[in-house]
Length: 577
Image (cartoon, rainbow, N blue to C red; front, side, top):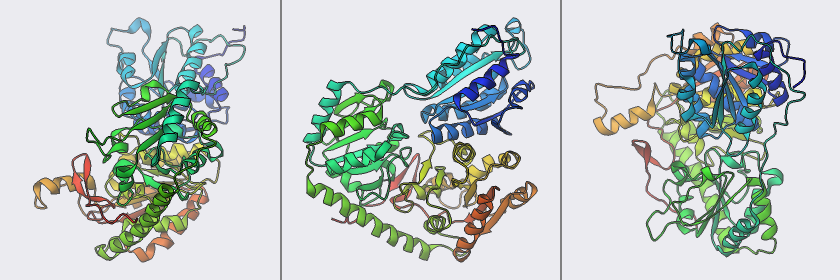
């Protein structure tokens, strides 16, 4: 420490954020505006949100898009508890997040102080690490540890509380902040070699690429490994964007979203190589699961907390990129089984034909006044440049975008999706964080249901005030379509309860009030023009909303209907080879 203090704790926080390379901060400060005063002279963007949960969602989107910490600042008491759903999502998504909150003065704890809460106890179950700065001298070290814990090991959220008596105190200044880049450990050589031997022995391997491989696929090393093995490639939902989906060995999203004929490959494979996946339930849904038919898995994850050891196989710990590079070197002389690669390519071709047939069927079946979702995705593909990032929700109709090849990410495309927690409204809010994380001009599209968008739309003035430009494509089925489908399943269509209703959304008036674009589409013939015009508004720096009327019956491929948490599967069809 030197003798040149920061004038306040928040000035020290602002300087550390600059050191981290943070370009945007999200939040809803408490009554103390000192953080905003400290950020006033900087070029850091600040998105002042209407709701703390949305602020954390935005910061999580920022973190997932960059791999660097997203930063969120909130007040105390109920402000913190409002933020906890967002923190849960950040933990589940393995997003490096730094949540900074106000705290009660230490000498007032236990006195019924204003908004007093044992915040450390409340937040600890949701974060990797939590601490309170109760003296100014501790703050610099705590800031450095918060950043180190957030980005290292399995990334995740951390929490730092600034007790009230600290915020206005001078803070001793470190001579220089420590480097904040994540350290990515290499794999143990013996474990790497053992798993390479298991992979070499497989005749029908599949690669499963998870969110832990995000930002770790330099020089397309995962695709090169697949080519060497002749392996089919799948991603988890959170792993989309890691590999190029126009690669001839890519066959879509695994588990819940592996529609026929791609699901046949999982019954035929003899090994899964899971790179950066925790093998959560949605990723393994529908896998062969009998005691005698369980698929062996070679799992590569960064930390032991990501291991799933319920299936036979082996594992290696370390950075996903370094593990894949090591395997490629050890398998340099490997010669793949050509028949299996041909089988994978045949399935991919059959998937493309089935998607075209399914889209045609959906278009013919669309009720008057609605637009088929497959057509919305096709029009979006035509309207927005290929380097776009699609930020998704996980409702009934917007799940169409999870099913390859109805939506395909090319080499330059990207995706951000909710974790297996799927909190409603995450994608709508996270899109703002993704937009501020990326270079100017990179298109960001939020593909969301109307139920999720309605939870979020109180933030439309926040986007307008901050100058955040996102294209929102909102699928309007009248409310909570997934819940309605489940209700219809148990009660029929005559129930006195309802989660959907045909009524005006009111979004047009809100958008106009805040100077944002808005269009409503009820005819497929109007879709291209509406999306093209909306994209021009977004490219010019203004958020635009395109509401599209869709039918509740327009269910995604592979789904026969809702059945609680998971859908019923359609019957297996011809597998194309």
